[in-house]
Length: 380
Image (cartoon, rainbow, N blue to C red; front, top):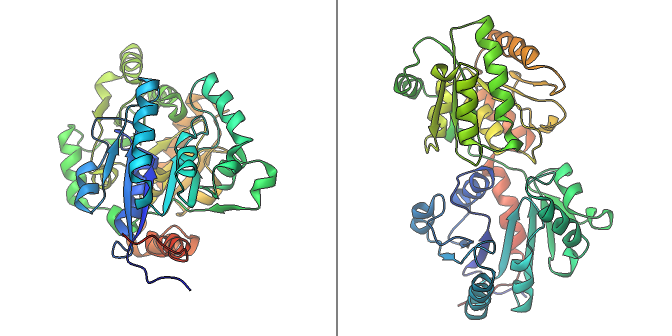
């Protein structure tokens, strides 16, 4: 017989300093989970504060910072071992959220120190790092079953990349569900942020994401240059940061479009910025199951996304369209301007779409709660 639930405590890996897709996914679930029954702690591979850290602590989480493996391997191993040796009895599960299997040390350590439920969760569908990390992913893919007890993924293609065929029947798809109400269109914020960048009646195109080849902002700048040749009354706002930032800024100058391109860095009020946009341009070269594409649709902004890259499952609204990356920047520009015909849908229509397709956080969070609360727990 199960003991009465006092608190089921989960150690979560996946939060970094950058508020990207995985971080948003974790926050969506943590904000909505029943914290009288389940509580999260966060393992962070950086001694700097991670995204949303103040909010995490405010909701009752504990954050544990260790040195990154790439910074100082010996120190990383010592700190990781010390953390699990002294704290592992406080956790009923570990939930590792990653974009590759290059590093599975957290699961190995969790098994060594007796954490019964060990979840690996795939958030991407191909390697987005070095060849070495790609090689390590292939090796660890063959041994992951030794260390994990549960196998989750954000989408079927992300599962296929992470797990062998023998494991696929055990994979659980956990939707990157969001709080639809939080991202509702706001007319006042639209005015506020457009005014902030000096955008009056221009057709404002936007993109949110890490400045990285995966998100394909270099191509996006080529597309925007073609758009301006057709319609000069347009502007582009890029929200995020990353290793390609300086290259992108230089390219905007080289294309002679820098006066129309606004780099605004990382922003906390994503719903407000989405409200300011007329079109979300999303030409990623690969994705798992993009949280930001869902957030854009929850806001109602029209979206033009990579065909065959962004899964069809992600389409919630009628003003979400796909276009092939095989097409030229000029073709993308023409298509982007053709999207002006679409009207932002109403909030009730949007909420219904998300609920029917399984991407409303209020429904999806219950599935994770039920999976954990079936387990017998450690009371402390």
